[in-house]
Length: 136
Image (cartoon, rainbow, N blue to C red; front, side, top):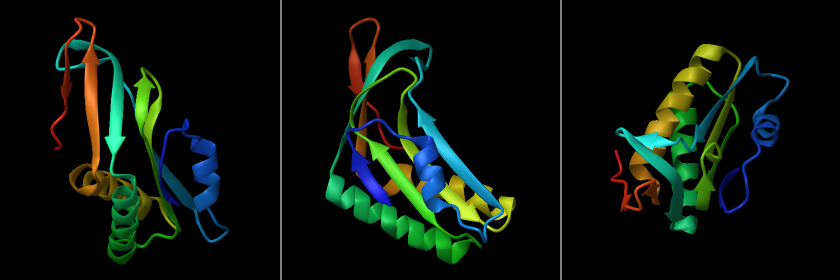
């Protein structure tokens, strides 16, 4: 599953989606909206995406991950719209026979998503200012 959605993300659902009887591990990255950035109080975030392209890029990244690491099923879901502090913005779940490849693959996948997937984040601060975050 590679999806962009406005709906709240369900960690257990994505976890269950990727695991199989052949796997000994599922590593899940849950990106959560935090209340601060660079010493400033963040009130909420807004995400926008080119959804069709984002889903295609996530699928391409998953294929790269499966070629590079000894892993099985992969799912990536990114939420867009207004997200409050504590809400999940992205879930990446990777199943594998062993934990180490799953950990490494998940970190690699998240790095690729931040660099390649057309999703943009705007931070809204307590002082009323806001800005778009540059991809990193």
